[in-house]
Each structure stands twice: as C-alpha cells, then as structure tokens.
Image 1 (cartoon, rainbow, N blue to C red):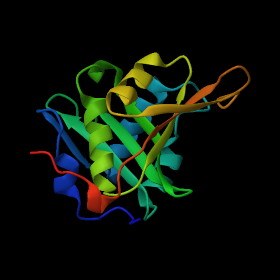
Image 2 (cartoon, rainbow, N blue to C red):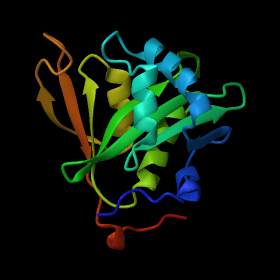
Image 3 (cartoon, rainbow, N blue to C red):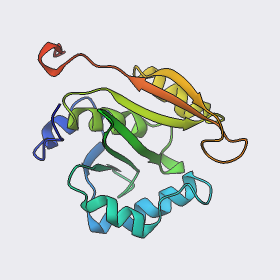
Length: 172
C-alpha cells in the first residue's frame, strides 16, 4: 500500500459534480473549516481550529476542502492511513451546501488521493443521511461500536473494500 500521492490533484478532481472544486486545505481555509465543524458536530466532536492546524501539516494526512461558486469552503474531508486501511476521520459539509453533491465529491476525491487500500469510517447511529451517502458510494456496514460517541451514542462502522490498485478497472 502506498501513502497518498502529493501530486494527485488531477485524480482528486475525477468524478466530482460540476461547480464543486476540491483542493488541499490551506491555512486560509482553516477558520471556514472550523465553522463548518461547529455547525456540523456537537461540542466535543467538532475539530477545533488548533486541531485542524495540526492535522493540516501531518505528512500522511489528506485534508481536502470543497469549494463552490458561492462558498469558499463548502465542506472538508480528512483521512489518513490507520491499521492497514485508509480511515476517513472526518467529513463535514456546510449546512447550506448539503444535498448538493459536496459530500459525494469529497468522498470521491479522498478515494482518488489514496489509489490503493480499503476505506473505513464511523458515523453516528442517528445520522442516517450520512450513512445513506456512504452506502450509495459503496460502503457497507461492518459493525456497531457501542458508546463510541459517548454514553448511549453508538457509532456505525462502514467499510469500502477495493481491489488492489493493479486490478482496478478504470471507467471512462
């Protein structure tokens, strides 16, 4: 398995809906990402500005932002390699940009940034909208983590198994 390709900008752009552009997160994006985190997650689950700053400089972390014609930061995705898989640590979309393909573009972009390996992620049990997005993109439920997000707040683990990079078919 390889680490993310630092020159994968063209691959990241593959398969995303029109009017949504993905780029690696930069310092100027972090305040916008922090605001989306605060709007998307309850206290204790949202990444802080300082946490986002640290993640943005880790060499094996892919941290992408989605931009639209109307929003400089419409969403973000953060992923790394963890225990032999690619772990999507966080995916968040600005509430005003939801249901417009931003989450789909972010998922496809981070998958393109890691050309090989299976993807894993966790979603809150009540967040059926997020789970539906992941399932549409080929993720399958792989378990329940009781109290993962706190007492009585369970997580649904999802996984997307991919064939080795040499055996993947390219669709045109």
